[in-house]
Length: 132
Image 1 (cartoon, one colour):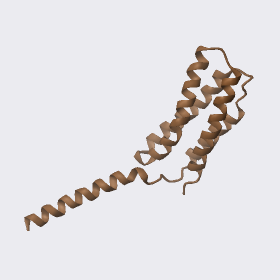
Image 2: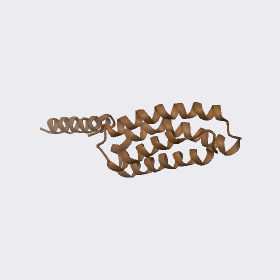
Image 3: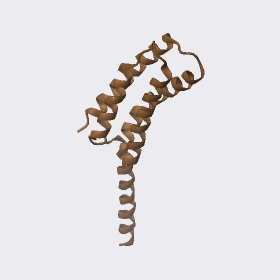
Image 4: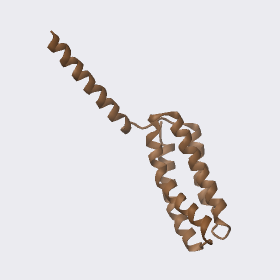
């Protein structure tokens, strides 16, 4: 009888571990605030004007992405999927933010970064807005 109890306990613990490891593959649910903020980020990127001073424009995008990250983190571990979605954008923006704070603006660099961000934000927005 003790052997059966131990076996059930071991199998139960393995089942719990499997559920926890599968949790990272289960998408998070719809959230109005996340949907609004990812749309704001897309709008900020679309409105980016490479002829104007870039640092304040990039800082706005960076702040919106930070808001999204902190909000998602505050909601709990089920939000890891959307946090992974915005990391590429955060990396792109962070590099640009540092460069724009230290060097003169470069229109070609701006256009290239904007093109990358348009694509990244489009994919992230489709995923965030496509949840149920």
